[in-house]
Image 1 (spheres, rainbow, N blue to C red):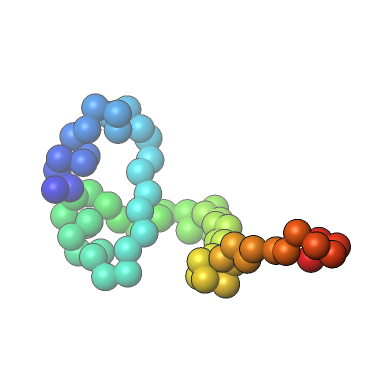
Image 2 (tube, rainbow, N blue to C red):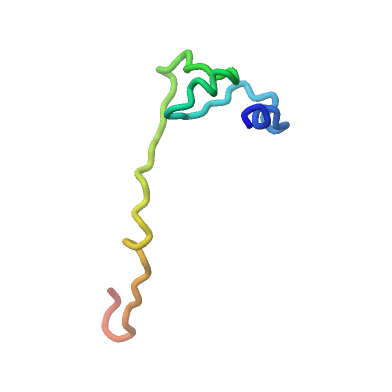
Amino acid sequence: MMQCVMAHPDLQGLRRIMLVTSDAHGLYALNGFAPPVHLERIMERVQPPSAPESEYSHKPHTTHGSPP
């Protein structure tokens, strides 16, 4: 599968392709990936996971009285 992904025409000519894995380092190493050379240059911004849909489910409001 990695060979197919890496051969995709839209990826040709890219200077850098990065990925994140928790346990497939060996697999990706076989496909030319290596730990970043300049780790100090890499930054990320992580958004906390969204609350489950049920916490923000639509709650109908009554038509009388002031809005909630």
